[in-house]
Length: 478
Image (cartoon, rainbow, N blue to C red; front, side):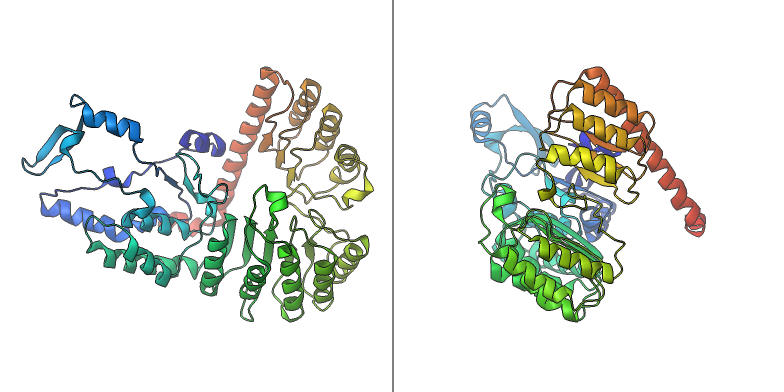
């Protein structure tokens, strides 16, 4: 996992193992005890900092291995032996067994909680296998201090008197991180996590951007979520809620009507909201009922300039045009452009008999001259060499795109070679995914990867140089 991060970000990854980095029992000098206490007072920084990642290994030793070691005294484990006050290698049967699950241990639960206080859910991951009981919905949101205290009362501690200190520390972290958080990006939330999110939102006092993708819920819960996000004192400017309907997410849980409830709740709030500028509600199975309620609210709002509801919803052309008319009146530059998802084209899918024809047409007529779209996702569309060649021709003209995902298509050697030829001229692309396509030679893939890696390294260097030039006083202080 760490190697993947290093390859992706073209940067060194520093690892911190908390247990082996601290003086553990038994600490024999005052200096060791003071070092340990200073570390404990600030341990949460490693788990909750916005520039760090938490990678968790939660699994216990597999039962067959555990039982085999109990019976084999030749296999020994080095541990601290209190009686002799030294490290000794002992057989497993001589040690005290502790098979408490990771999520049942007080300190482990605290570490997961500290890590969940970040605004971006993906910075807190389990890396030793998925949770089968949770399926794909394993996202977490921070617990309120009251809910966390209740969790701690049910958790196991080696030293029960640690409970109070852990509760106080979590409260400090929660208010330090959450009250200042400007952006939240969450995904794969179970219904219980969405319930907790609704309870926690009142504390996000500086929230400007909110994104929630793939979640379970009911229409009533969706309505409460919107109402909590758009209270009168909100500062929210961007709102993205997608894949509320299990039909698109590949999992079950959301009740029918959740998407309409989102749209209707937004429609009721838009006439009195003056902070929101951008809204995306893709893949929520919104029907005419929800779309018309959303449009009715939008007509009384003078601030929204971007709204994406075209894809994964059943929106009539009349409503779509009505939305575009209001957005244009509010200051949107003509047809609305969306920068992060594959549905960036200004025309709806009904204008083309297939995604392949759509990609060829829009590559030639829209993306070639568009200078604002930066991300392009075109995976799982059965695109072939002809579409890849159209995209390659576009790349010779376009200089705004930096990220392209063409995975799980039918692109072969001809299409890949065309993309490679265009990359030799276009040095803006820092990500290009061609996984799970037809046979593409290792030589072509290698050269594409080398060019993209070089582009990314150059982009990082330019960004660092720009940052240094813009903050000379900070550099001098350091």
